[in-house]
Length: 478
Ligand code: SF4
Ligand code: SF4
Figure 1 (tube, rainbow, N blue to C red):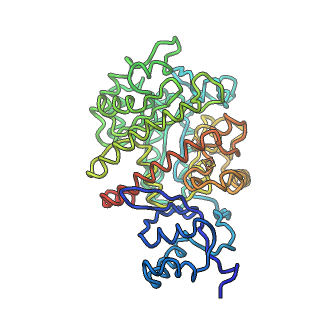
Figure 2 (tube, helix red, strand yellow; figure 1 turned 180 degrees about the horizontal axis):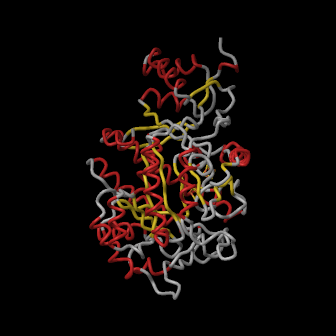
Figure 3 (cartoon, rainbow, N blue to C red; figure 1 turned 90 degrees about the vertical axis):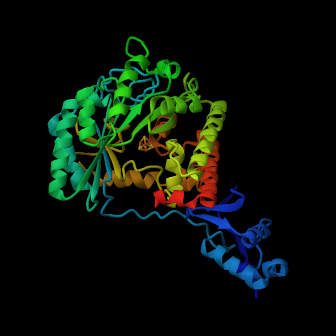
């Protein structure tokens, strides 16, 4: 007997077509499920609303056979694409482990000084949240604080076999002396503790020279260069303090780095603004003309109304460019070749691993930033802001503050996100961006939802098509 309590209904999913097949992206389990003919018809039969199992079998059994329809319903219920109409919605788990989270990545802001004056910079530009000029924190992290930061990293990384140490700035290489000593110390400590220390840094490339590159190569340091593309885009915002563009200065240095640094792939990170949205041209210049292994793009973080802020039509243009690059990526992946568009690669990896986020990123969880004075913050972008501190490397982590932050920022507290199918991958977006845009880290970044959903849909389609045409390519994300 079927009654209202046994009616079946669609659960939360996002359907998409790829490679001639139909898929559903299951929310919130974040699984991707390929539908066969029967399951597609079963889901379509539930489009108008809940129905009883026997009615579904009666309406579809003539075409597919009753047993096949029942089996399909069982499978759809197992993956939670279908469930009891009366069941409450699935929610992301809210329990936070009392023992805390092991730290996977620690970002040391080894200096808050920079030798460039990029107009849009979140650290020095109009939207800065850390007043580096008036702050009592030193401009350069001392050797002693850097060593204590490494000790803190080992303490907090718990049982993890690998600790990721990332150097950041300001311009990171302004404090090269401390970088060298700190990494040597971390590697020594790592050997004693039986942990491998992975190291990476971000630089604007202005200070790359032979001695620095030799050190990067010998120590297998992963390098990301902040660069905005060919001369016309780089020189628009990435300028020296006298206003002179930096392209001609960084070009020979980047060439030397790319020629010599073969022990780790070198990536480029591009900030896109309203005036520099030509992502395909930028990508081709950086990958094909200069030889970067990977190129990733991030829209500029800014308060609304700034001249360089990306407006609505800009998001559409950016999406069109990203889609073109994603299409190139797909062709390469189908042929088993590397492409280098890291935005799509990173999202594919998350889709493949079934990442379902309760928080948008690792900030304050497995990732923390350390300011030049040793204050520990949510991430590198908040390092030194005081308001977003969660302890210090000298006195340890303030667990209470960390937990309060995490409880307040859980995706379940973001009303709009709770209705959104893209939440397993977005979860409301960057806290720093929310702070700059709305003055509140806890707000969802609702100004870019359309863009996020369209981009996530594109990545799902790329994933689906690869899974049909060259599934072995996806094994690299296992
Ligand atoms: S910020 Fe927007 S796109 Fe992201 S999860 Fe929330 S509602 Fe969805
Ligand atoms: S808060 Fe924003 S900048 Fe910081 S780690 Fe998260 S996504 Fe990155």
